[in-house]
Length: 474
Image 1 (cartoon, one colour):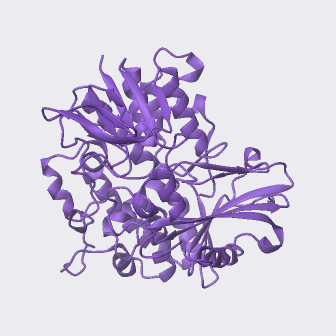
Image 2: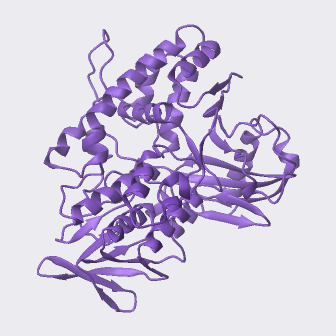
Image 3: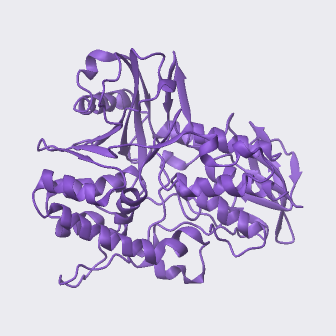
């Protein structure tokens, strides 16, 4: 079996390492940081625990497949995803608080329930208009699912440069590339519905004013497959994937920064660490996007994540919604999980508030007082979702895109979004084969982009390529 060097320990790298090790390969992971998980981090203080990356999981089937494919040889009670983590659907999936005072809660993975809720909030016909947009998003899903998500990029990828979101039947012919916000205004009409659709793009770091209309697929995926929470926080998922790697003998080297890929006759033959130490390998998997000269940085449209972690006195009241989006300037997402593992006791609550913001560069997050001033605005907005919030705060921790850059190495702390068709191909990522034979790309800055499910798919594609397959996550 081959010797595989995996650079970086983000979720895509872990998924690749687990699959390859389960196939019998000798796998070593080299991570410059002190722990695994990449953007799936954790912050702990005084009995409070917070996710510092994504707070919910979509398309859990990706990780179910990972655990099934790597479960052979393990104890029968340690093979499936649900045996390794406690996974639950949140319900309602989300509560939206709009500037005009409307309060809209949408059920999880229920099309009929969503239609009924929208009709009640926005008037008869609103749910039907939303459903028509979801029908068109489903067409995008069906056309692009395999080439955009499940397979490595092929020579036919140029076709994905055109937005596959279908023109509205009976509408005017499009004369330019559609963007999500303009499409939503045309088809949904109500500003509140437009905001609801746009919030899905914002959650992945895309501005709905510039994202292609195909980004409607993000709303379709959540509405169809649900929003899921991992007990203990999403970091518990990273813990479980790491344990799966260890169970199959993956070696982990933390505090080990890889500076170069060793090349011989046009082939990757190992890696070089900071200090000049070399490790031989038959294949190298780059999960950092820093070692391949043909790689690409995160597209300029990507946003970063600004987060305020709030330790609150007072317990979480009955009926509290897990996720609330407060629309405004800024639009904030408030996560209030009902999870005893995240708080010191039932007389306290851990709340996470996030905002999609420009990365470092367009905004100087290190400017004196800037981040704290913005945090004040974020907390003020979040009070709509957490009554009496200001009086309940014991302490808060502010995290900016600079923290993301420091922990993940992504320039500016931009959050890699999933690949989207359209936009002239600007939102595609480099393919999973590197410029050298035996060099592969994985993770958020490679195909099929960022997000927990996409990182898992990326790992499946690369593992299949190394095994001699065509590169597919099926």
